[in-house]
Amino acid sequence: MKFKHSDLATSLLSGLKGIEIGGSAHNPFGLDTLNVDITDEFTMFKQEEQKLCGEMLKVDVVAAGDNLPFEDNSFDFVISSHVIEHFYNPIAALKEWARVAKKYIFIIVPHRERTFDKGKPLTTIADVVYNLENPIENPEYKHWTVWELSNFLELTSYLNLNVIKTQDPDDKVGNGFTIVIEL
Image 1 (cartoon, rainbow, N blue to C red):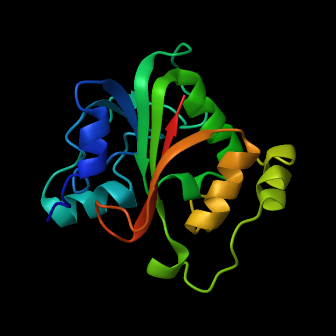
Image 2: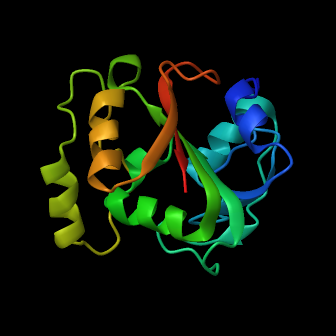
């Protein structure tokens, strides 16, 4: 099983060069990207990829998504799907993505009401600012933040990021929403 491509991502990002944070074989975008992931080991996520579609997407660069080994403005775009919620500090991740991208940040975020986060409290600006100011070493891999379009837009506004397009639900899997940031 593979999810379909996003028409929005294709229309905006085709012909450009980017990086995908935490890409997976069962959720391809079909774009010209390097896959950046925290590890290239056979994790539970890679096992799930193998189970869902019979293959695993090669990790091109092993690096934390909030500490990328690239120069400023190295790529046209950064794309991620169902990844931002795993960052203890999403502010640092978004700032890092804005640092390495020249044109766009394209994010699909799981929507609280359409995932297993249903019923959990929404993340606030105070929550993410607290995490920024109180870092922890080696945070466990889980959903640290819970989003709906409205509170994610509050975060982008707080960071003065230029959101040019949203989709709710997203046109890829349909259990999240899309935010497109122009730099």
